[in-house]
Amino acid sequence: MREIPPEAQGTWAGLQGKPNPQNPSPIATGFAVRGPVILLGNPDDNAIIKFLQDTYFLPYRPLKDELPGRGRGYMSWQSDGVGYFNQESITMIAYDAAGMSEAVGSMYEAATGLDPLSRWAMPTATDIASAKATPGLVPQPKVVWEAIVPDRVIGMRAEGGKLTVVSFDGTVTTVGANGKMTGTKVETMAAARDLAKAMTTPVDAELVKKAKAPNLVPKKSVAVGGGTAIAYWGGTVKIVDAQGQVKLQQKFSTDIGALAVLDGKLVVGAADGRVVALQTNGTR
Image (cartoon, rainbow, N blue to C red):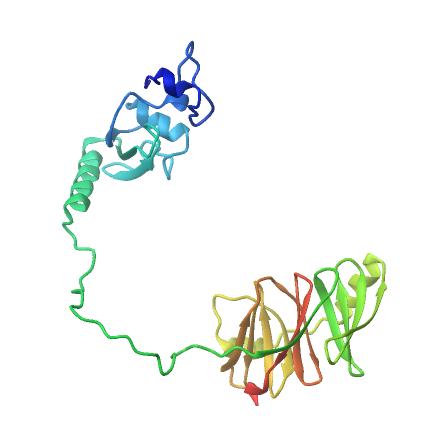
């Protein structure tokens, strides 16, 4: 173990507290190795590598015949694992000679830059100009108004020029076409769930297929402005035309609980309690 000088013992703190002079431990003092360190072996035959494994410095837990496997090795970088104050170490782990040869060889290639970082030559001169257009970038709809209800939105319905919003806590809020709240009442949790369920709109499965968003899971959809708004799990809303072409897109920071159309505007009810009206004229 590393010896801590008397002047540093009063303020010294290792991974788990101050060192005990009667029972010194590397977890409190580090190892008696100075400068950058290269470790070879595996947790079964190298005590420092075992320490790094036990203290979760290794990105993957090595296991004989499984990881890195026979004839294989892997490298790992650590800071403050062997000693403190930004002491760096590189560990090459293998369980047989062939694996260690691979690990050491890969380390040598990386250190000497045998494979270049980039196949492109850096430019000797540059010129910066404003972009005229951004291919593939879908515009966002304009936010017309925004309201806040007491809890996350689980249901919405537009009827008679007003919007009824059901919150998770049972609050039912009425919102006018201008985004102003006009009334609230509190239902039981069961009644609020039933009301929200009755407001659910089915997903247009055929249009979702045309929209081609393989990494997103559709949640809700509603017809709006000559197109269709599709809400996906995670907070993405896409407004698409009849052919599935995305005309507008908005990404919310939270999940979406409900969609509705009020006064020709798409209204999105979010999991953070926001009720946002979007202008979707771009689909016409």
